[in-house]
Length: 189
Image 1 (cartoon, rainbow, N blue to C red):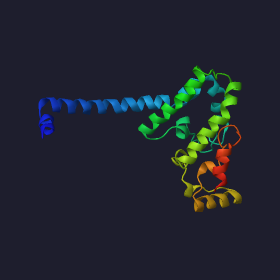
Image 2 (cartoon, one colour):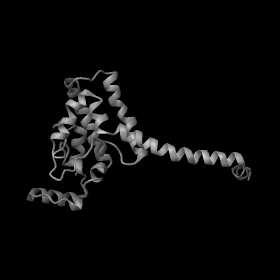
Image 3 (cartoon, one colour):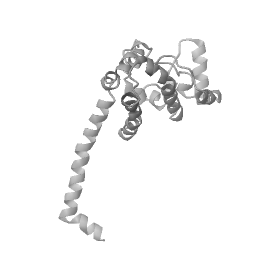
Image 4 (cartoon, one colour):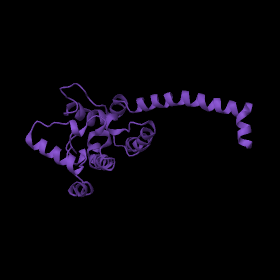
């Protein structure tokens, strides 16, 4: 009862108004910060190693050279669509900042040594999320492969609920060996 009396008073109304203004200002600011830290400019150009490796790979891949002209951004594959999920992804992404600043992975050669682990981490994330980021752009039922083999495989994938990354694990970036962990998961399909 005291709580409701406090809410109805001047202090309570001021607190509620402050929270409302904070949300109205804070959410767009947080969204803007997320968009900046999820941009290709930040992801690829902040770190020279990314600009010389994965950014080039994306630009030259099937995703980077689509005939439709629709080219995904780094965030489309690597950052959650929702703001809270995106912030968690950014927190996890500080591992890359640590790798660059503390471990000194700042040359292509050093990046290549760490690529296997990074690729496996992303692949396992996609397995665990049922390739959620892929599905923000691609609708499985609408995909019509040109080749008979692709048509068969997509039909089977729909029937057996096989997630995208099981088959498309080297679609955008440089071919990287599969870990035993990932191999065991895809072998279970």
